[in-house]
Image (tube, rainbow, N blue to C red; front, top):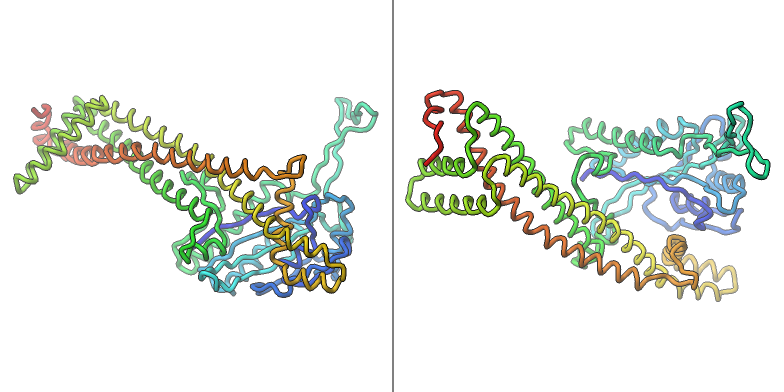
Length: 494
């Protein structure tokens, strides 16, 4: 199934990250960081099928060496909280062959990044998919945030734009220093640029789909911007999918099942209500030349037409029961005219939209909490390993222990970075509070689903009226073409 995933983040020291470590992981190599004095060894990492570095023509040729390149980037950044590199994570398509995917990657990088003067270090990953049968081809890209000048030196990320007064002189602050704004020297970090990259990648993939005669397409826009009233699901990842495939329920899987079920109900309801409103508008136009019948009159006419074609008394009795149910429904809701029905349908549509917005808020927060609690588990998992590592004095033993427990340690350090801002002044995490909030959100979500059920039952009831009005619209249009048939139906049914 075609999918779109295109995210851009930053590798930055303020989060405890290293450009060397990021490059080593993505390329599956062993690199030494001069800045940290550490080795990042990912040579045992599988799934890296290709990696390469693309340079602008004026960049030093030695930057083709990954270790030299990223140590140069680290050296150019003096600030201990420096932003080092842009990190792209982009999904490839299972509908394309490996060669086709690689060709698209090369075309995208050359046209969208290299042409902007960016240094491009990329790696294509194709996990073997043995666990749960998951196949998830994708590629990573690292681009230094600091641009390279025409002379091959590293340029500035920002320049000063001084604030001027009406006479064109520099304004001064309270200490007598010129006031200025920091302006980026490139457009690489602008939201508009990211949008253009996302769109360009989607267009490349869609052109290939069309070339191969495939009907599937991807869209770089969010569901909201596409005009789709859909709650986004949580990305599960290969581990969660593998567990779910084996029948092992997960929090992510459970949340996504709720979201998919809700989406199905929302889509069906919105589609049916929109169709009913369109039908009522067409019916009013069809009756515009003479008196508009009431809904009860339309129902009686509809029954006459149905019974005229009924072959048995059983069918006629069934039609009478359905008519009585609809008449009772119309009376209970005080729906007499088409305008009444249109207003009621619009009100119901608004109620469903309000519930949808509320559900969206809850699912968004539940995803955030689920991610935080996942990081907490990584901390707990890695803490005893880190304690053991800290007790090892000899370098060779430390390196061997680190290599053996590489995955656990990486998850631990990642969790430390992501949870850093959530620690209290006492050095604790509000885990109990998060779990309590998660449970409250789950209960509130279930309560909202209970509220949705009668609304969707209403939609089904209105859909029967849609079928009735659809038949009557067809009859009215036939009568407009045949004046003799129209005369027979000028008076309401008795």
